[in-house]
Amino acid sequence: MSDNIWQRDEIDSPCIKICLIHPTERLCTGCYRSIDEIAAWSAMSAEARRAIMDDLPARAPRMVKRRGGRAARLARGE
View 1 (cartoon, rainbow, N blue to C red):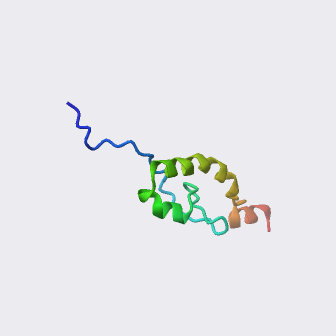
View 2 (cartoon, rainbow, N blue to C red):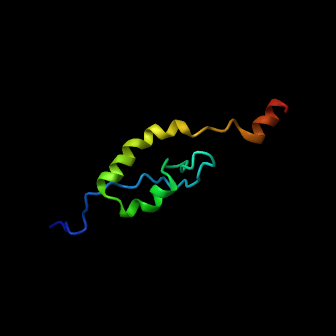
View 3 (cartoon, rainbow, N blue to C red):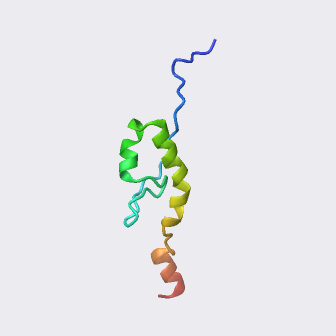
C-alpha cells in the first residue's frame, strides 16, 4: 500500500545550486530567477510557478557570457 499523504502535485524549483546574481540583469546565473522570485517561490501558487518556469528559457540569452577574463587576455598577449 502506498502512502499518498505526502505526495503533492507542485512545480519543482528550477534551482541547480549555482547561486550567483548577475550584476546587471539581477537574475540568478544558475536558474534565471530574480531575487524576488527566489524569495517568494515557496509561497507561490502552482500557476505562478508555472508562469515563471515557462519564462525561464527566454531569460537565458540575457546573461552575457564572459570572454575568458584575465586568462583570455594573457593568452592573447594583452
